[in-house]
Length: 106
Image (cartoon, rainbow, N blue to C red; front, side, top):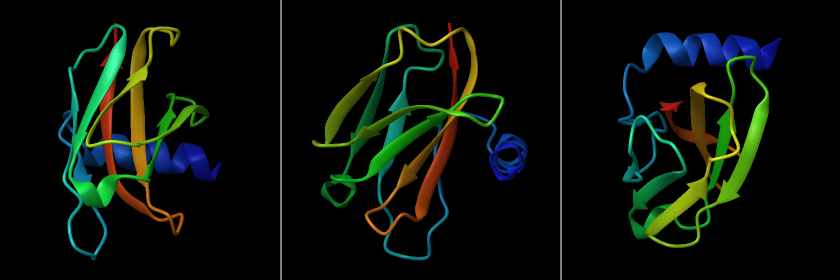
């Protein structure tokens, strides 16, 4: 139930691919593109974001992918995901959500 609630709140708050910084700490600069995406979702970050985890969640609130960002320019293969709306969360090393966003998979 917690996952579904998180998804509903995030879907109401975030209206495009631009991720929102939700932590009170110094900002991580992370952008995701393209939107919609067919094969690879790219992430461009600053150095502070290296080592954070990207969790991708489907509309049912189930985590479908998890990936650790290892460079300032990284990409996740989403080609095997079904078409539809997905949310992503950027999780820091302390397991806190520091940023969220959404994308459409073609």
